Length: 69
Image 1 (cartoon, helix red, strand yellow):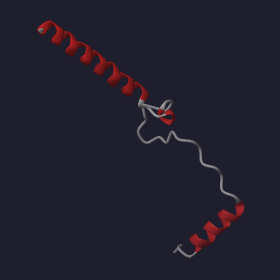
Image 2 (image 1 turned 90 degrees about the vertical axis):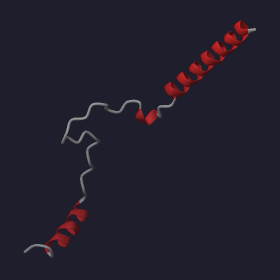
Image 3 (image 1 turned 180 degrees about the horizontal axis):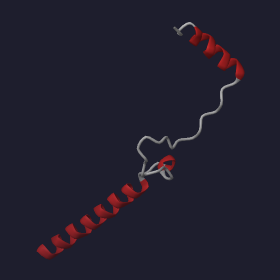
Image 4 (image 1 turned 60 degrees about the vertical axis):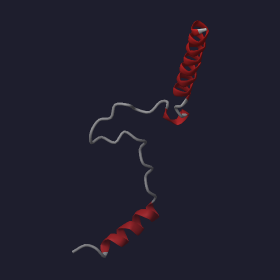
């Protein structure tokens, strides 16, 4: 009787381990697959910003004019 119970527990442990492994391996989102894992301190490694158009630059300069001393 103990041998049957022991086998049953072993099978359940194996199934549980397999299920946990599948969840852990499949848990990463696709967007996180190719991201950098080693980051350099003080260095931005993201995508480059798009340049501002002339009208936006003029508007920012006008806003800044009132703040100069």
